[in-house]
Image 1 (spheres, rainbow, N blue to C red):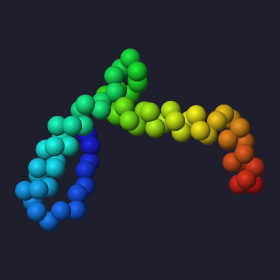
Image 2 (image 1 turned 90 degrees about the horizontal axis):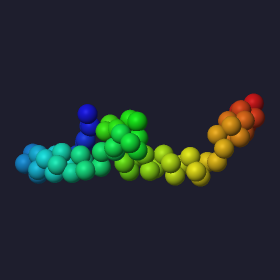
Image 3 (image 1 turned 60 degrees about the vertical axis):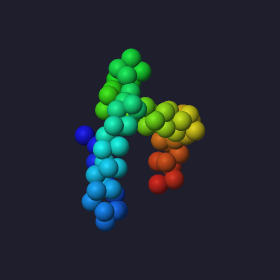
Image 4 (image 1 turned 30 degrees about the vertical axis):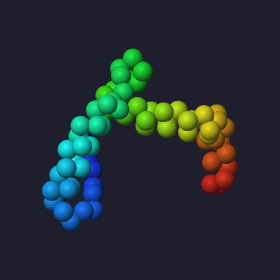
Length: 71
């Protein structure tokens, strides 16, 4: 289930955009062999999570740094 919000007063345009989103979003569904949360997790989200994990570095070091910073 996906929730979309749009700020358009024209009901017909809002429906057209909702139909377009409903047609396009399934293309981004992940596959079970790549992501155990498939198809709920969209491929771009999975890629973003991987990129963030890479940029943040070692999770244990980050956890320790946060604990020290927070006292």
